[in-house]
Length: 148
Picture 1 (cartoon, rainbow, N blue to C red):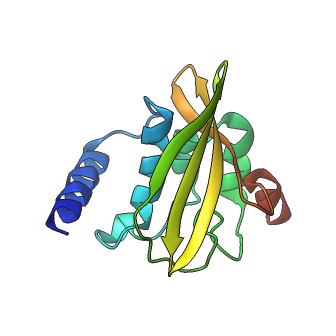
Picture 2: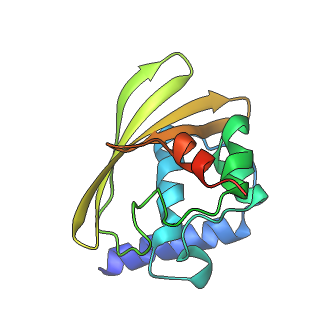
C-alpha cells in the first residue's frame, strides 16, 4: 500500500508540474495517465478526467476533442459508472496496425469487473485516444448522444 501511495504521489507531482501538451510517449503511458484522474489522492486527480478543452487536447485526437469538451454525460464512460473506487488496472497492448494500437484495459470498479479497449493513434505530438470501446458502446457514439 505504501508503494501505491508513493507511485500516486510521484504521478501527481509530475502531472502538476508538467505543461499540458498533446499526446504521450507510449500507448501504455496514455492509458495510465487517464486513470491517474480516478484515484483517492489529490482533489485535482480524484474527480475523473475533466471535460475541458485543455484535457481534451492532451488526451484525444482532433475528431474527439470537441465532443469530449462539450458533452455532459450522465455517467463516466471511462469507468462505466457515476462513482468509482478502482482496483488494480491492467493495461496490455493487444494489436498494432501502422499508427494505430489497441490497448486492453481491465479493472474493478466498486467490485464490478470492467473491460475496455482503447484505440490510440500516434500523431505528430505523441499518442492520443481515437476511441474507447466497451462491450456495448464506443466513447465516440456515447459522447455524440450527450452533446450540448
